[in-house]
Length: 207
Image (cartoon, rainbow, N blue to C red; front, side, top):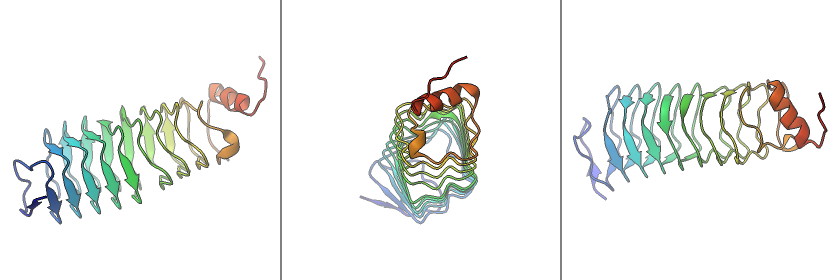
């Protein structure tokens, strides 16, 4: 794999390249495409992008702080030790991506497809997730205490030992959630969700 060592974002980064230690602070990556690129310790702080595409890329030690992504795709990507503090994703596609040992403080994601994403044991306390498709996502052991999770499709998701204490869950599909294997104290649900949770416990709900 070749190394890209220029301070500015090159017009073209060849598939399979490695970008190491670059400072892309505040850059506009709209419309850019990256394929199988490894980004190591790259600073993406306050980057903005509409329609950017990352296919099977790897982010190691990258910083997404306060970055804003719209209608962009991160498909089949791996995020390791990546800081997503105050990052926002609007209408983005992250299907099949994996997050390991990442920071999600103040992350906000609205609309978009996050199906099959792996967020096992992720510390996502206080994040804002709204209108996302997260079908068959792996959230085993994830911490979302105090999070806002509104209108999210979690059908088929893995939710064993998920921490949803104090989370706002209105309109979210909880059909895959076993309340006996989750922490739900103080979680806010709507009446339809309460019925689903009660039936999961074997209760018979009548009018």
